[in-house]
Length: 184
Image (tube, rainbow, N blue to C red):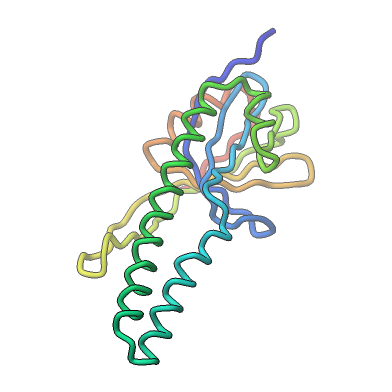
């Protein structure tokens, strides 16, 4: 029997012992949940804007305003370019992964992992409020999200899902998991 992908859901994984609060994509297949971690550009490239800003700060201390403006400008431009490149690389990797077979998704990155349905004892879900600030000038906005906790063998996995993603996720996973406990 060929394993097929039944649903693709965006989530955030929050595991204290690992990458706390990192975005990921959950692929529900007919035999398991595949968790794909989002990987962008190398984190070491953050040194480029820091070096440029250090040059600008040095120019400020030396009262060389040409050096200050060049360093500050290059630091700002490098930060914006790296942020945009990271966003585009993550989006491209996600769109490519959606076209792959389940085993190929696991092999695409060593941080991707699977949770077989046979090993899931139960799933607990809980609704919580999250306050997001759009900017410093605008008020905070209240959002409802769902924490979904998988209990598999002697380990647990916690993911947070947006409210609009939660219901389709539970509909798709319910036939495979015997016990789903929902709490408000």
